[in-house]
Image (cartoon, rainbow, N blue to C red):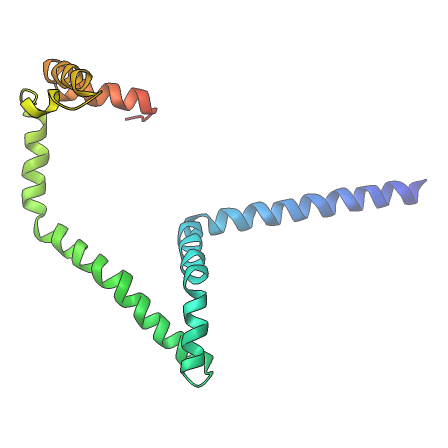
Length: 150
């Protein structure tokens, strides 16, 4: 009987230890999960192209990996760096726009909006309600509907 209880205790402790290891691993990897998912998506999506590239490059996996890495670098990182550079260079304008957003007034609805089939009248009504309430009230309502917090 004592042998069965020690086996149960050993099994329970082993399961708790494994759960603690899994939990700590997830906690450690949590900041990297987005990058891991993104990298996995990119590898899965480009795998057939890399295999065909490997066949062209004398069946050398290392050459295919280098070429694919350079291609993905050019396709993803270069445009992203240009976008970041554009944001940084226009940071002053963005700050001015953000300050002016508090006093922004929505203009009257455009004439063509009413001529849209099926949704024109409702779109004009919604536009006019938002213009009358103000942009701040509209953003508060959208945040409440979406469940966003301050």
